[in-house]
Image 1 (spheres, rainbow, N blue to C red):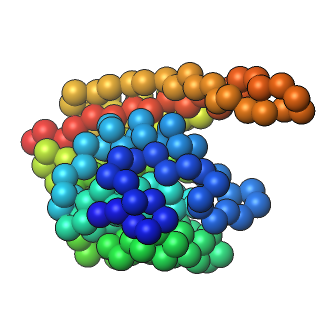
Image 2 (image 1 turned 135 degrees about the vertical axis):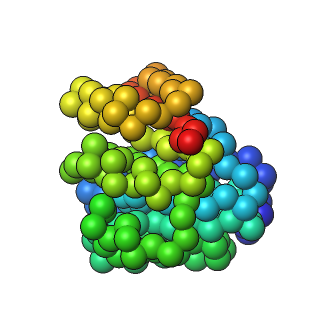
Length: 200
C-alpha cells in the first residue's frame, strides 16, 4: 500500500526520508531490501521486528503487507517514539510498537508471528531461543550479524533449534557519493544475513 511520501510498490525507501536520532542505528536501504527478500512476506503476514531501531523495517513491511500486522519491539522509550513518528510519516497504520526488552517482553505479545526479524541485540542467541517457540510452523526467521561473535552465535543457535533451509548472505555494497568536486564510491559496512524456516 503506497504512501504519499513513497508512492511505489517496490521496497527500498531512501535513507534520508526517515526521521533519525543521533546514535540510533538504521538499516541502510540496500540492506533493508535484502532483509525483506529473506523474510518472504505475505500480504497478511504477522512480523515481529525485535530491536526495531529507527523503524525502517516496520515501515517497509507495513507498506508491503497491508493486511498484515507488524510488531516492532524496542526497549528505549525515545526510540519507540521515533518508530511511531516514521510510521506516521509514511501513513503506515498496521504497526504496533511495543516498548520492552526482548526476550522478557515477548510473553506479552498476543499474536504469534509468521516471520521474525532480529537485528543484533545484547543476547541474540537468547532472543533466538526464546522467540522460536512462538514462531508459527512454516514461519521464517531472519537475523543479522555485523561481527564475528554474533555470526557464530546465530549459526550455533540455528543448529541447536534445527532451523531448516538455512541461507547466509554477506552484503558488499558501494554507493556513489559526491566528495568535493569528485564522485567516488563509498562502502556500506558489510553485514551477514542469516535466514531459515521452522518446519515441525
